[in-house]
Length: 135
Image 1 (cartoon, rainbow, N blue to C red):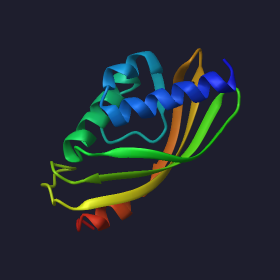
Image 2 (cartoon, helix red, strand yellow):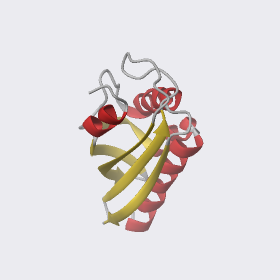
Image 3 (cartoon, one colour):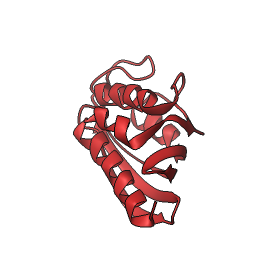
């Protein structure tokens, strides 16, 4: 696949997150996709992302990702992002705090045949927990 098609697939993934269209992950993520930074208990493939982002949307109903910088080649798409939301539901065993959060992260996704097959990522989880008063 081309650099442009990989960027398009990554952008569709981000749109699915922001619109809560998690069924789109079936078309965008390979069944055996390897996540090198999974959430605790996250299973492989589209179902793992559906569960993760579903839980995130419950904790932060207004959760949104904004890509700040994106670079790509014929196999990989890398981007820096800012995530925002208001904590209105349970998160990692903690009740809602009502606090607004903003945190940053980086991700690298590898694509084959228009689907994400591997992911590496890191986000400022400590900053998130500090903003919520949980760390």
